[in-house]
Image 1 (spheres, rainbow, N blue to C red):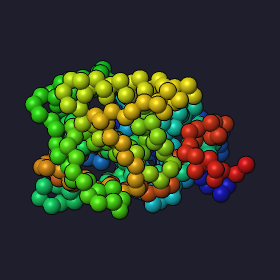
Image 2: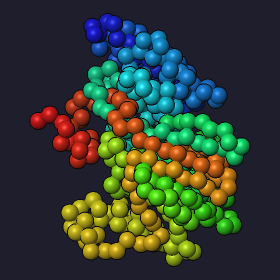
Image 3: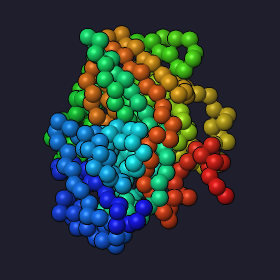
Length: 340
């Protein structure tokens, strides 16, 4: 397609971005690339980006630029599901988790904008979650990083959004304190792929397409964005000692030892702690013992009685920097499939 026929759609959260600076960067990049003037789609409180992304595709967008936090990225990805149009990331939030997991720039606006016009496309997996409410109503949403049921989701629901705007991820401390009051354990029935159903008593279950969290915390060390699998972890501490075991596992073993050859050799001789249970699969169903909080990529999605999640392998196309494309993380299968 001639450059003059290509057009970017900018789906942006007016609260999260510096709009004037973003417009200047887009104008400069589109001019250098020889593209048509970009179209602009501000998100709203009622629609965080899915509807805007769909409209941009209908309007003929060559690439949809998502400028905002994790919620904007998730919503735009949901709107692009099945469209075949790439998403470009302008990280502007607290976590910026997809960009972190792809090791992309988090604080260089002009560089990120340039990538939308000059980058190359990479296919990653898209998580799709069907949420079932207590009355039987169901709704389907996409996610790109992680879905959570239980304490993790309750923490997000209990976090003050106004405080989060002021102090960022530190606002979650208050949400954690409020969520830890009382007995927060839940009983789940779960079914992974074609295996038989099982019962599980947990505080939190996380269904991950990516494994890296804010603060460089590696929660799911085997997760890859393009392996066609979910990495799932169930947290089930029994008192303070259990929480200490989880912190040791995540912060020391995953965060330090797994990052070196020597550390991985040490880990090969250690036993897994029972406070964490790891699973992998393409499809998973969780049915709770009552209405429980759920979150998708950090968005509180209310209470559910069941979650059915599946991986759509390679369903989302992400535009990445051309000069760094071979440095970005990929699963072993994806590396083997790349041309020499």
